[in-house]
Amino acid sequence: MEAIRAEGLTKVYPRGGTIALSSVDLSIPSGRVFGLIGRNGAGKTTFVRIAATQLMPTSGTLYVLGHEVRHEVSSIRLRIAAVPQESRPLYFVTVDELVYLYLKMRGADSVEARRRTNDVLEELGLTAVRRKLVSRLSGGMRRRAMVAMVLASDAEVVFLDEPTTGLDPLARREVWAAIRRVERERRTVLLTTHYLDEAEALSNRIALLEGGVVRLEGTPAELRARVRRPFRVTVAGGMSREELESFGQVSIVDGGFLVFTTERDARELALKGLSSGAHISMAPVSLEDIFLQVVGHRLEEDAPLEEGTT
Ligand SMILES: Nc1ncnc2c1ncn2[C@@H]1O[C@H](COP(=O)(O)OP(=O)(O)OP(=O)(O)O)[C@@H](O)[C@H]1O
Ligand SMILES: [Mg+2]
Image 1 (cartoon, rainbow, N blue to C red):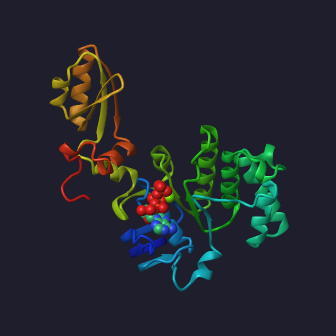
Image 2: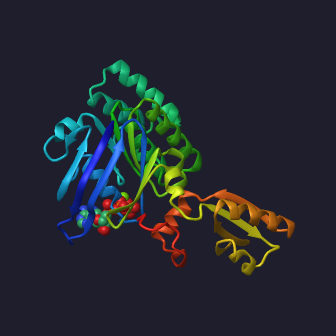
Image 3: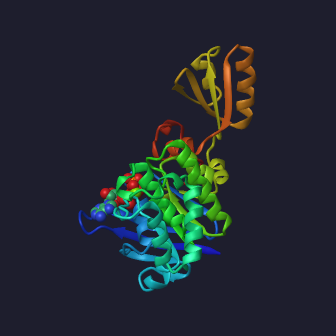
């Protein structure tokens, strides 16, 4: 089952004529976390806002839970919840009220709203500040309160546009756990993030947008499989750049060299490196490596993707 389906989705902002999305086709399965990644200005927020019925597409279609965003806005709105990238919560309520009132507004009864509020505040580490006015919270706390509100809802599709930007590392983990809980409840999460470890840790599938176009889409394993050299080996000491170059693409990193290579060459390189007294570490390429290869053109001269994959 699909939660969201885009067909030829295009958005041109009238002001400035920016083409933010250009004929995007995307299928987002229901009941899982889908990660949308890409550089600043790639079109992520535009996509999320259209799907959350906050913005009209210029052309193409987008279905959310089978309803078309242009004509069936009200059927969609009841079943979704969104934390926008730039969210300004109600300032004159407490954290507790913010969540509770939101749930009541969505139609939960008082008992249910109370239970869900308590649970989510606990889950996101907000219990200690629950009686504080939202206006008196720190920026990160305020962000968490917004995320709490939406993750406490029973919406079938949840949109989180950079939910963990500005959060401390522990708070981020709490949000991750809450997102996983929402997934266990078989609800769909559309997540945008610049933290690629986060996208990888949480997402069942990932799409990489660049200039309003989907450049890559698939499970993290599928994305990795599309890179010609899916292993990263770092080598400190013991071997020269010339020696390393016979194994793959070499770049200089802090304290040594980074080599992108095939699995077989990675093994060989590790054995050779160890016998030369080098410090070696070896891992599959990260989502960040793939990102840099696709949109950063850092490894341009070594065309990392196979023919016809972009
Ligand atoms: N309201 C607007 N009016 C005109 N142009 C806009 C508007 N909102 C976004 N854009 C443009 O559309 C493009 C896509 O922007 P969008 O906000 O979707 O990117 P994003 O991927 O979310 O970026 P970021 O990672 O910085 O949040 C950019 O070129 C941006 O300047
Ligand atoms: Mg954005």
